[in-house]
Image 1: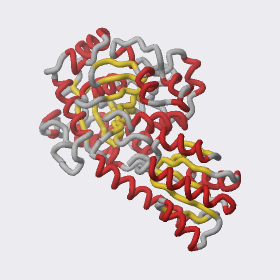
Image 2 (image 1 turned 120 degrees about the vertical axis):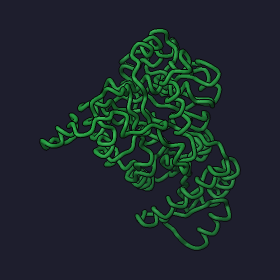
Image 3 (image 1 turned 135 degrees about the vertical axis):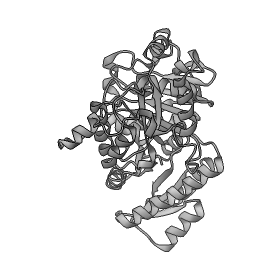
Image 4 (image 1 turned 180 degrees about the vertical axis):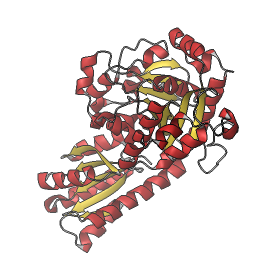
Length: 409
């Protein structure tokens, strides 16, 4: 579940800071904008389409605020309107509800009441998601270690999607996904950040680099120094806006848990954790799982994919899965020559070799990521006996040996 997004309106700096602190201190929430004028808030809500808009009522401006709430509720019916005030009289709350507010929050904020409001906002958002039937998904591709093939998998996963898909290169310092697609972008994430206050469909279209009918790219900054001005809150806002315009978004992430990466992971519906079946790869994956758990991401959102898998690797899949506490979501075969050919050609492998084992598995993963998660068959790797893949019983594997001597990963 993506975080709940908020826009706030308050003319009082104390109340504004109180709301900011409450939203920043909760893992479920992200503040997209803080406004102090009615017309500013209306414009921001219509542009960003947040989960909720919080309007702090002022006693001497209550009538104007109520009229504004009516306008806001009519213009943005999918945004939950929450009113807040120090005065919690029945008359004020009733007038708020009559104006179109869904919830009332008394100031100063009480933690239990705040959680109740968040629960209500979440319920209303789920109801809207169920009725909209858009099924939009954001998928982050990540690894705890460099060299695992994240960019290759992200590019081909995006190319394998059957609906309009945006591939976002968030390797801000050294992103090179454009070369995997044979593209030379004119604009990048840096242009999105500098123009974020006026992003609309027309501007978004002009800043995105098209690849094919169903695939487009938001490139990493074209110059290294351009990455310096990109903050985590910029990434949150931009992914929020794009998530309402594309059916699928695939994020190519660096292998570090920096603030920008965490902001992107927060916005993802699914996290694809890519690993190699060697001791360093297993260690880094175990560490990444531990960090993701500490960050509060549900295990149901995290899916491990083994890349460059080959039958002659001297590690048993079942033992690795038991060690990690996770079943593998996918096993992408190793074919170095074909993969490098596609990269050098600047064409996704799923297009250059549509019948290969690599392509078949990536397409299955793409389908499973957006399938009904209640269908266990849809979420499992291709049918093969894990016990028979390596077939080495009784001989200690490198993993067994490392575990026996007390090493941890």
